[in-house]
Image (cartoon, rainbow, N blue to C red):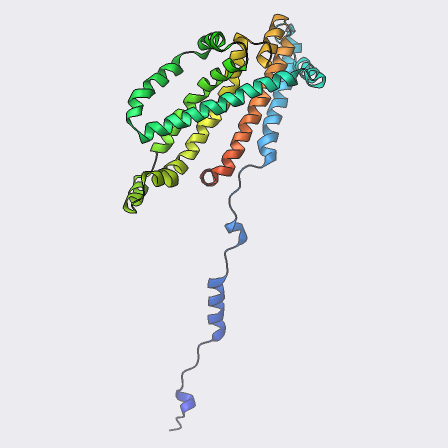
Length: 297
């Protein structure tokens, strides 16, 4: 027998296969899989609404010409654009726009802070809900058009009466959404913080308030649009400046194209305010934005 130690020794494992397996396990995931999902681009968010608006303008112009509708009933889009350009070019809109925007923003801030404070107090001190909430609901059911003349009588024809009307309009959406957001907390997380001996302030700061932010911004987005409406309602009742004042003047003069141009000014202001608030929401409540995108995909 010609047995040798070399013949009895087992063959070593191939190092190349092990190296390949190790490198395959260590290879990072492709960059495409690690990218965060993105929402619709700027062209889709802006271009699509503008395209729909252009189509509506063409159909509107065609209907006015084809049906021979008088200008004092419904103006053509070309007349509205001409009136809008004239008001912007002459600068007649800007002083009144500044007054309306200031009233809307100040009233929005006041009403939102009141709604946030009341909502937080109702959640922290439940007895306040039985004391205050019925009166808030009763106040909300009263039409603001009916309250606006009283505000003019009590606070005069200046900006104060309009700010009060705007604050009353803005309060309720923020109040309701604040209460809903502060109460929509996962019980398991509350139990975890309780097990860690967290104080009520720590529970509010680290759990309840961050959890309520998407709800609060939903109320703010509603309130910012209502604030423009409240400012105009206050100006309709009694004012000597503001976009609402210009609309009344255009109606008295049967300048329907001018009135429609002022409607466009209000719409643009409302869209810009809403877009600004949405931008702030995406920056501050970024986790809700990422969940929304993932849910859409």
